[in-house]
Image (cartoon, rainbow, N blue to C red; front, side):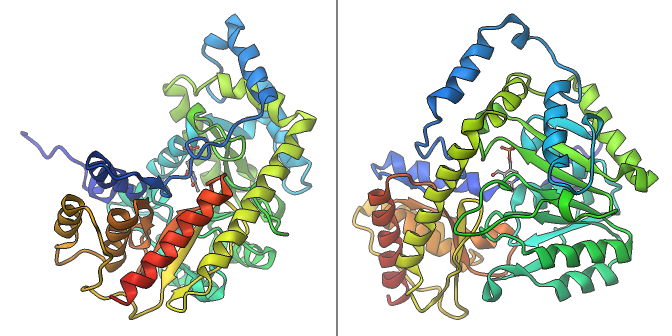
Length: 434
Ligand SMILES: Cc1ncc(COP(=O)(O)O)c(C=O)c1O
């Protein structure tokens, strides 16, 4: 090429949650049956939407108007419906004009960081959900900036770490919260959220809250929305239907802008996001039409409560199986549908193995782990895949110095769930004592 083609930030783009699938597919070709514990898609894990939801969608599909473009920011009635839902929480008040639809939160996330000035940074949690950390790092052409979530304190954020990083890095303009969190399943306590708002006030920052799991809490937990605690700080809440409906294939999410009138810079940023969507014309229309009909239906609350209760029960089953392994730091989860399990320091060693019967699979796994610089948790993950056919994601891939792995809580058949997690436990014990 006559000039440099690739942007420097491109090397920051990675998505191990799907990268691991390439490895699993290679083993599948060799005859291994894979249990997919890597991807947060309830539908892929056999969750069935209730018939009344499918009927609403079918009805929309049969109408001619469904097939046209919609307004750039999204259907007005839907934005009015969502604004009311937020306003009913009693915190910051918004109108339909403060909402913009995107093609899934993935689209919203990549746009949000793209339009932040290159030298300005948003600090986010570590372990980090890679769609945020990669997009933020790619915009800055630097590695992600993170604050620590502490596995020894229920995965709550280390607020001293956050405060000090914000204080000593004047480039930080925003703080990202993922509440409930992916990959830890932690729900931010109210006091912690209030403290983060205080930090934002002290240093004149804005807040981003990824709230895609905001209505997925269980076992007594409740997640406080950004709109409830933000006071007069500028902020963006990101919400969507991929997880809570769940309809991830709809590619439908939205941003809610809070306190645009309090900061002109922030207001211009929100306008730029709206304009970015405008030059793309608009986002997917069918799911937008469905949202008020489904989320506004009296059956939805009961359906979501029941689904959450089931996730909560599975969370406990997993806890019962894994919390007794002394080499692990295990935290019970209260939101979203993941758990991140950490190996205690010094327990993972470079010679450990799990028995793999199939010689071809054994050879392939050994070739993968035979790299000097392979993180030790990734080595474990490859052995678990080869020996037990269970596909999980290493935590070192979530911008974390910790060693561990992320599982999902999505397997609906509790017998299969018990079998899978018992096999994970047995694999860990065998590996650590090999
Ligand atoms: C925290 C978080 N934000 C955003 C997304 C992406 O959502 P969408 O399907 O709307 O792109 C995910 C998907 O797993 C997620 O876990």
